[in-house]
Length: 213
Image (cartoon, rainbow, N blue to C red; front, side):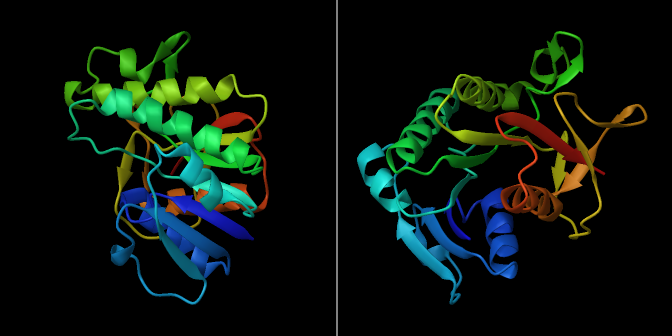
């Protein structure tokens, strides 16, 4: 497949890039700093600005799917606004480019821990992550209203960590996956496996899903 990958040099994006290339896909990496990309015969790096809808539209044309690991950075003061604006621009550019299939890696904060209660709204949710998590939740809500894209939103387990690629994990839906009384975890490598599996064999069209060991 010909895949456009947004944010390919980030923590999640780099894992997605490695997994996609190892599976033999042709990848266009859309990043702020193409010089940070590895060299690979199936990889084309392009400097991109997700807020430039017209420019991004041209870069996305001709791809089979868009994979987004867009994350404005947890240290940004206006991370919530940046998350929402960037996600909106990616949605708009994907539609304008005629690429219906959009797969987005978001956060775990919008997963449910009880009926009507999302993780982000619990008293113990870390304050330093709340603005970014709120931006990711609103990005998901934007997609839920989207009628012109075959979107999928992947929320990782509560703990997303470095670790090996095992290919062995559980899939879930709207609820936070637990290991007994403890939140579940997943390696970033296996998160990439889950998203590339979904890209190749869609099971969650216009749905959110999650993954954990």
